Image (cartoon, rainbow, N blue to C red; front, side, top):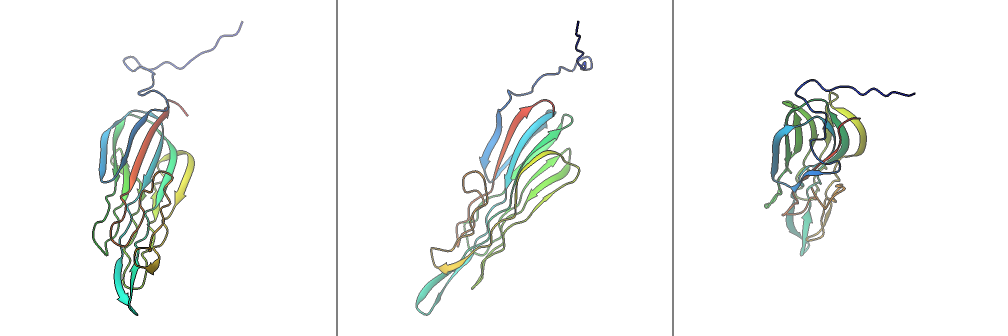
Length: 194
């Protein structure tokens, strides 16, 4: 006869899913802040920084434009080992020229774990650099899905310059001449254990 043993949860602590597996906890364009107590478990998170804005000018009787760079994108599966505070922020869009995009980030237990940097601004005759990402080595990563720095903005006839989005969702973080796109965030609960 075969007996299986299962680990017991301490008294007063149920060993159950805090959400239905596959549940989307939050999905939003920036500017948005999700601040809560995150239950232990395995989660899939996507963060994309906001896009930068560029500049327009006249040269040789033509209107020209430069775009800001796009925001960096990070999507991964991580384990939250205990019930702790989480703050996840999606950076805002830009509605005027020559501005850097805002960073998007996740703080877990008061420690910055992920930053998806905003794209840099473009200027006269140059496109902005793409945002860069960083991941704290203390985060318990199960799987990296996307880890992309943003694309640089282009220089073109006005209205055609762009910093192409690297986001796996929507066109979060796209750079533009004037009206860049906001960053975004997506948090999904997967399961209780690795």
